[in-house]
Length: 131
Length: 335
Image 1 (cartoon, chains in turn orange, cyan):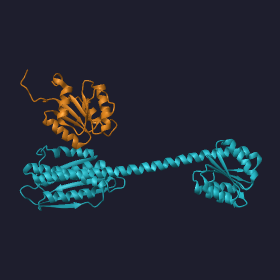
Image 2 (cartoon, rainbow over the protein chains, first blue to last red):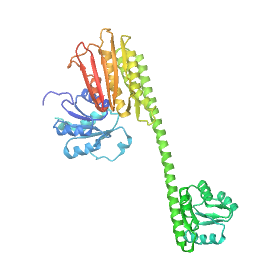
Image 3 (tube, rainbow over the protein chains, first blue to last red):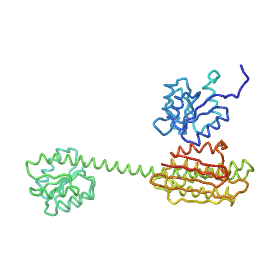
């Protein structure tokens, strides 16, 4: 195939997080790691972005967000409408991490550990899916 | 349960005793035929039901109701009256009597129903007041926890600020600047956090005070005596914490950006901060008389990427006006 590119070039991720500082900080770190990052401040914005046809390969969403739909609702929406799209759920609350969530969503604790997040994204997308 | 029967007529006491025993077979019954009996009974035990006559040869029903109520707020009280005493009885019901029954043979079935209902009502009252006591205690506990939590968060933020300041002093050059800026961002958050603690509801902050402190401090650190702050903050503005936090960070980013870039090469200048309230709406303007910038010339650093998101998070509109040579003006409108 062609010459090797940065490991995550062109891999597009959507970061859904209501706290601006955390969302922008995470987006900048993921951009540094080579990802193409889209941002949404709540679940509704994320749904609109996904419906608009924006190419997204992975969604990283906070669990607790204000508004009619939280991160869990978003994950369920995605599994219904975009079943091929992997979702990573994050929460800063220990009780959430013990809560029953659909098994196919990996759950991570906040604050985000970028190395762990990147390896989870790599595992979920795999070499065949990242093209 | 314990029941107290008060009547100076032993036959009437026996009559009430029969009805009460039929209704509450498990109850312990005490009788008071004299004032001494009554006074002794009031100190002897706790009663769930008191049945008393209105006219006693040693006292009256009004006094009995008031003494019983005072000693046993949750106790049921039923009164025997003669015909013609109904008005007195109704009046006594306002001061704590549960029910009254006219003393006559054909009223006996009503006595039983009346005692039963009065006891049930009293039990409900008692359960309610216990529930109310528990709720009051739970509320006080919640307030205490919330206060304690804010206190700890504030202390932790101050520790973080102190650590960053310390490292900034021990480091040189760009890293020291970075650390100082981080410390100042944390301090902006800590200021809001500290002000939460001042309010009774623990969900609002005095944003005017927060902003004043922030401007004064940033101008002192970055203004190097060249930049004069001009504060026009006539109205005290209180904001919910959920809006005050992102807005404080936004102000910090805007103020720092002006202080670092608006007056290069040692120029003098004025940094104006205005906040006006009209009804529910609040307008905040941060204006510098520096060199300004052309749109498109803006760098894409952390700060400038943050501000639009912070404005949305604070549920506000942000507009930025700038022209080369004509300073920059930032307006934030909170509806």
